[in-house]
Image (cartoon, rainbow, N blue to C red; front, side, top):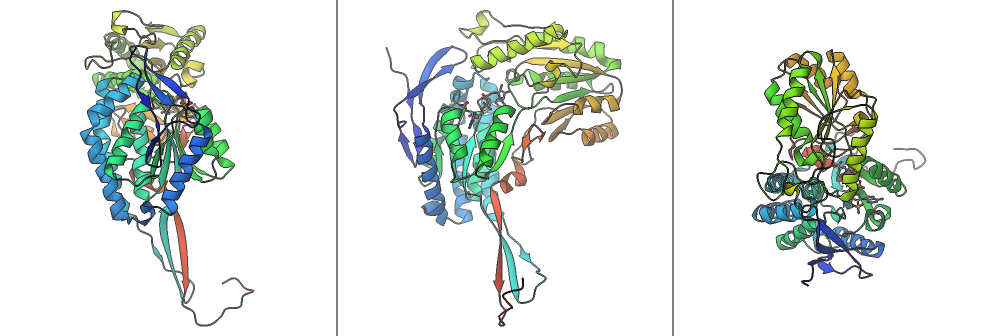
Length: 496
Ligand code: NDP
């Protein structure tokens, strides 16, 4: 029997076996085969990685680089990702079963994060404060926040890591990354490029393994200054609580139940494609899924009929086949969760308009984790299927009459990550966008992300922003420096 490829952790510039020698298996969701073994890092490994990152931050070569030199390294990493995009995308597909088209598009786009933040590295300027006191020169500096624990999920491992890695490095931070246990290998392949780009040892480290072991050790470590987390809301809230014990900064990109609102003046063909991309792309496994479809009364019947017809033609199959449109679910746990929610929706009285169960057939290969693209009609917003994140190809349709009612339904939810608005009226587009409590609003488009534009959640969808200049600020802290030029000695018992 051929031995499976074995992936070690990356700590202080070296590929290291886990301290207790244990590995876990990683499975290809389409072939259902174990294809690699990955280091199950212990808290001890996590501690070593944090120490390496802390040394690199405070005493190593990295700490002596100026911002331009740092930016050049970040840019160089972007170039290497560009050269290796196809290979990285294939690792992602093998791990998470998402479409090669989608993962390749993401990997081809990743270099932009490194070019943007690489360029920004030496444009972060402090200010000279026109201070109100005599004989004092006061200025500010924006300094790296410190060691960052970057904790990433399985749905878009490298994209969501790049949201963190590029600005953190440009800001001068060092990192320890803990990828999802389901999708560790693309992050480890990326470390080969980090090494090749010439980052000094300890600047970027990866500990693979489980959230409750390696992940928790990072969140608790006193030398970690910030946690940058993407994942589920429940885990995010727990991580936030744990991080509070050592007063860490946190950015949390969490779940969503985003409304996609189609008004009666929308271009229906465009809206149908937008709704499909919002819920069936990536097999619905995306935090920004437009999983609540709100359709205005006058167009409801026509729109829903055409939408269901379009969705029925979605091609399931091998994610490595460029013609496939819907692939398998990434993990068995997620597959069970989706089927559980389909059952919940049926129990609640939602009407199955399409799908509604597991999928099987030759197009599913050996995978046991295909779910039919599913559409529920007759949903009202208080149902669990309308309120809770499914993270799968399951759409709930809610009917509304007026603009005010649409806003009320859209906002009547604990989440606030994103929303879609489909209308030809500028007035309506602006009024509705302003009224919806969510971090991203797309008008006549859906699922657009850029390195330039801030991304993050309102309410239970998260804290802080990634991307854009705001994304860089999350990795900096401000120091105020006071220099006295006074010749007299002030009264020490009075505040100056
Ligand atoms: P989790 O939120 O559980 O995991 C995200 C990351 O956090 C993983 O690397 C995980 O490690 C790690 N983690 C989990 N618990 C801790 C902890 N206590 N301390 C430190 N790190 C921790 O997401 P899952 O991957 O389990 O998916 C569960 C649900 O989360 C999905 O059903 C979906 O609803 C949602 N989700 C949301 C995403 C988004 O983009 N907003 C992305 C992915 C999932 P490990 O994998 O080892 O548990």
